[in-house]
Image (cartoon, rainbow, N blue to C red):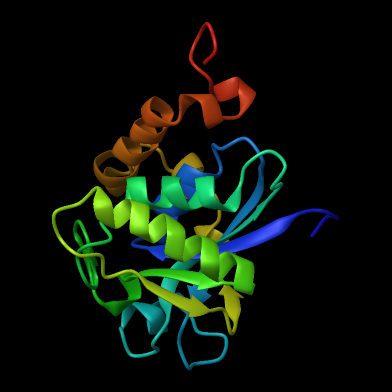
Length: 186
């Protein structure tokens, strides 16, 4: 990780969705899909999908806090998944799809509490998002990296991921990487 960079580790449904969303944001340098929050060392995708490892599908985001703050990263996180439904995001059901903010520092924990309070005030139902210190992050198998970019026509990508990507491009147009901003800039 470069000097002055930070990491955020977030789980909110399928890691393919979160990767596709976060890699669009200016200041984000890398998004790695993987697994966190469980008790099995170096789990496989199949093990995590079984729901028996305790791990959630997560992404680890390396970003420049001078360009994109941790709080703004969390605001995008709450905008692209349902933090009020336990163990489910759309068609994806199971504990591996739960909503979790895995914190790296006490400062991230404090920021998560603040942004969660904001997010809770914008919803009718209570948030079920957990805030936990990150104990370990295991990168997913290589074939998960860049999934949406590599398979944009696949049905799951069209029905589940593409609408989230489009929503971020609308709602956070001013936060997008230069090549992704709407004509005329925002």
